[in-house]
Image 1 (cartoon, rainbow, N blue to C red):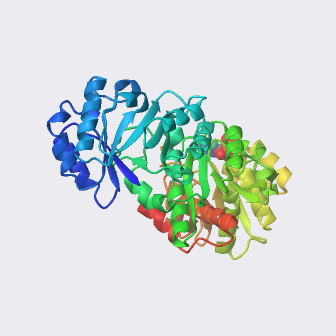
Image 2 (cartoon, protein in one colour):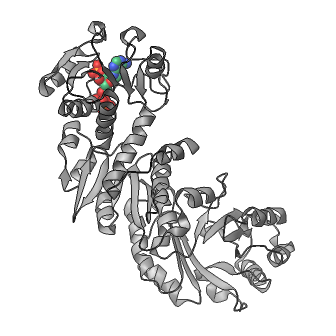
Length: 481
Ligand code: ATR
C-alpha cells in the first residue's frame, strides 16, 4: 500500500488529505500530533473518511509533536478506533497502557530512532512482535549504507505484518525496496514534497517512476550510486525502459559515502546492476572482480554488472560516446578527431577512439600534458593557439569550460568549427553549451552531454538485459522530468 503521510493541524487538513489521496494512495496516515485539539473533530473525520486511515498521535520522544500526555494520546487513539479507523499507530512501549479497542482496528506497534540505527534491531523487532501489536513497525535513521541492509535482514525474520524504514536521505531506498522484503506499506510525501519524516518519496514518484506496487520479493534490483544523488535522472530513464519492456525490475538511488562497504552489501543482497557516478567512479574499480581495459585506460568505470558469480565493471560513458560518434561519422577509421583537454575524461575517450581507428589530435591549455597523453596513446598534440580546425572531422570537448555557471565560455573560438564537422560536448549542464550553440550556427552536427547521458544509459540497459531499451523511451522519460 502507498500511504500518504499527512501532518494534520486541523479538521480541514485531514479532510483535504483524504480527498487528495483518493485514486492515488491506498491509505492515509493522519498525524494528529500536529493538531492542538484533534479531539474536537477526530471522530467526525474518521467516521466520514473516504479512504482507509491510520491515526497517529506521535510523542516528542519518538519524533512527533504531540503536546498531550500519554494517557490523553492513548485515549484519542481509542476514540479513533471506536470511530472505525482501520489502523492506529501506538509507540510499542506505550502499548501496555492502550485500552481495549475494537477488533476491526489493527494496532501498529512502532519504534523510532531519529539518530541512528541501533545494533540490536532483531531484538527490537522481536519485542514488538511479542507485544499486542498486529503490525510491527521500526523506523530508524540510516547513518551508514549498511543500515538499510541490516534492516532488511531483520525484517525478514518477522512473522507478523511488518513496516521497516530507514529514514533520512541514505535510507530512501528502503521506502521503495522495503516492499521486496515484506513491507505492507510505505509512507509517502505529497507531490509538493510535504511529508512527515526525512527521506519520504513522493506519491507521484512511487507510482510513476518506481512502479511501487508491482515490486515483489522476486523483483530484480538495479540502481545508481553517487553522492550527491538526489537529482539523478537515471531512475526516470531506466525504470521507464524496464516498464516499457515489462521487465520485473526496479532501479533506485543509493546515496553512498563508502563505496567499498556499499559494494559488499550490494553483492551480498544479490542486487544485479549498478550505475556509478561522482565521486565513486575510481573507487568502484577496486570493489569488483573484473575491470575491463576501457575502464582501466580511462581510470574510471560507471557500470557494474554480474558475470556469473562475479561482479564486473565497464565504462559506458566512453563506449556510448565512441559508438555514437562512429555512427554519426560513418565509422572512425582514419577520421581526424580533435580531443579538447588532456585529463582523465580525455584519456578514456582517446583510448576508445584509438581502438576505433581514429587519428587523434589532443588540444590542451597545458601543452606538456597533451604531449604526455599523446605519447602514451600514439597521437598528436598541440595548444589552443596552434589549433585551426583544418582537416578535422570531429571535435570532442572533455574540459569543463562552458559548464554551469560559466555558460558563456567555450574552449575554442567559433572560427575553428566548419560545416559538416561533428561536435560533441561532454558537458550536460547546460544541455546546450556555448560550444554546441556555436557548432549549430556553423552548420556542424552536434552531440550534447544529454544525448550522451541517454546513450550511456541505453548501453547500460543493453548490458544488464541483453536487449536494447525501446527506441525513444529513455529520451521521453528524461524530457518529461
Ligand atoms: P577530468 O578528469 O574531468 O578530465 P582533469 O583531469 O582535471 O579533469 O582535466 C581537466 C581538463 O580540462 C584539463 O585538460 C584542463 O586543462 P589543463 O591540463 O591545462 O589544466 C582542462 N581545463 C580546465 N579548465 C580549463 C580552462 N579554463 N581552459 C582550458 N582548459 C581547461
